[in-house]
Image (tube, rainbow, N blue to C red; front, side):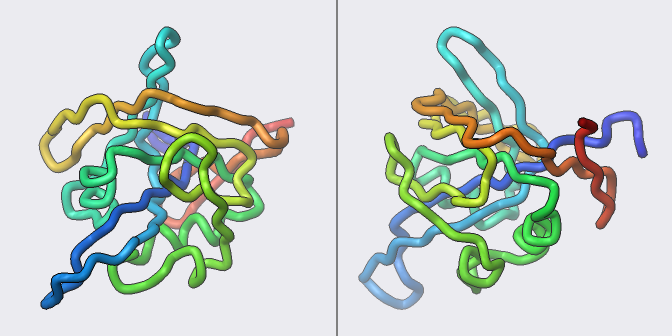
Length: 165
């Protein structure tokens, strides 16, 4: 353990139309990024911030689409969460490769993770560059707690823990 860990780990799903390399055609790309750096920043309006590394593929998708979904994941899916954090969505479809399932968000053009215990559907209202990361501040358009379950928390490396009952 460290001074700032454990932190609740979430999967942020995103989507954008991107131009294929060496082509004039665009394709819809859905992706998932694993994040520990996230937090609520306001009650009224409800705002939620995520911090995404500048080298991450999802950064381009969120910058282009201006939407994202924060998916709160159950502890029993920590291996799928780790898989999504260790692989780039530029070369693979993380939904298919991880065995996670997607469903359409209710209020934004973005997928959600079916297996999540709850989610926040967000529209980006601000971006802040912070060294090697960009903080996206999203206005929460819809939130829902589907079930109360132990959630996954990252300690360090491949080590995770969960909440106590």
